[in-house]
Amino acid sequence: MVQQGDLVFAEALPARVVLADEVEVGSRIEPGTTVALSVAEVPEVTIPLGQDQRAYGALTGTPVVVEFEDQAWEAVVGEAVTTDTGESSLTLTAPDGGPVCGADCADLPFTVDALRLGATVVIEPEVDGPLVPVSALITGPDGTVSVRTEDGRTVPVSILGSDGARAVVEGLDVGTVILLHGEDGATTDQPTQVDPAAEQ
Image (cartoon, rainbow, N blue to C red):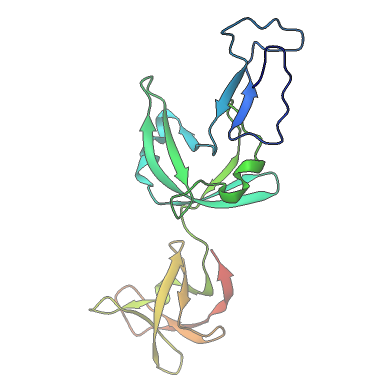
């Protein structure tokens, strides 16, 4: 039994605790004084939104990379939350729904105060593949996409990403010479060579 005046040491605690703000060396502790505060086992990671960013609430499920010092974790946007004071934020979770920091949460120096982390919202995931002009793509009646090679072959491709003028595709070998087509599908085709694998 711990008696008044006893000093107790413990190797570990069942929860993370921090000293209350009013407690410092030399403080007089009276009965009922709060000396420690319990901190959540894992932090709640959120992205605050300004008035002009409220539309980002529609990005549920969007991938996010969260960084702290030399660590990085994959996350996804959860729900948008608005407080009674009108402040909005996006909650983040791990892709499996768990905490963003996973097994590293215990190593993060978070307390009752907010800990700032870096976050990159991945609006368009990075893709790799041959880069071709959009004007070289042919869309069929059934929605399939293909390109025509210099020797007259039609090669089906899948579009992995596009910046509006160029597209990263799958199903075409780098170095293949393909034809550019006019908007009306005229036969005044011009040959162009597929660029090496590109990243977008």
